[in-house]
Image (cartoon, rainbow, N blue to C red):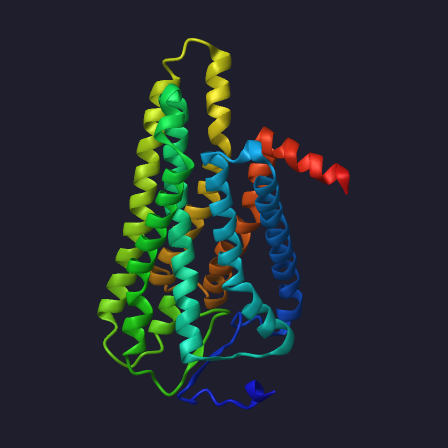
Length: 312
């Protein structure tokens, strides 16, 4: 109950308002939030369970899929529980340390996911362009190493964000018009010079997401060139089918992230609640859809999930 009595000027806390302008509808808005979160957890844990139980799925492609599932769970969990706490119980206070910690995780995990999507593109490139060398080029150990490199890269790039903000003075009015501690929303609470923070955040978005998208695009351009040289139409269709799930995940992940980041920085004429809704869509929709996409598009995984479902 203490959260209701905290003043916005309390030097140890911020106040998250939820979705500005739509406070009266918070209870109704919480329904899709909660449903998406449950579906996300259920779908991704099913993927982790099935891949873990089935020896035939202990392959690089499915190891990457498990990494993606873990990042999906982490992405939604870094945001949704606090948002539901605001919607249901009006518990809006969050400590400065808690806010900066949330910021670190909600920017680090998508950066790790972006690296995993790059690794998935490389996996598809090797599978289609170098099929005879696939087993020697992509081993489970190398995939795990790629995941570790992606994690280290994300931590090194994102860690300066909360460290820099933690050293800056914040204004007396500490009300953040958001459901979570987004970097730019917290930056606007500072009374100091935020030029470097803005530039670093923008550079981070372009370096991580932009560069990763560039690498993925290059991989698929090489894949398309190789596939178009295949004389058999059936083989061409089969090759493209192996890539559709990955392409769908990219479209629902990187594009949402980049669009949300750009509108938050340059969309001054966009209503505040639209900014917040777009940001939450990124944290809700892709983690919910990703296991469904791979479950539908990947025949082997679909069959294994069906096997365990039929046993229940």
